[in-house]
Image (cartoon, rainbow, N blue to C red; front, side, top):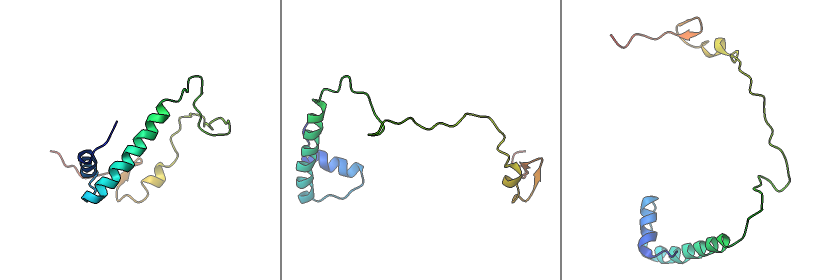
Length: 95
């Protein structure tokens, strides 16, 4: 895949970046070099390679999925002007 100046300017416009003609020429060559490197990476055979999250093998820390009420209802409604049974009271807006 190759990028031309029209594509560079279109991408810059979509990203809301002001690009001069001189910058577009420079960015064209830089983007083509990046895309060339990506094409080289796609040629690498990675079959049999397990995905990893870190260089060191480790297991992800997990917490127990326990249902609770949070115990924070009183703290949450503490600053509300009006409450009833840990619910906010608001004026009626629909008749």
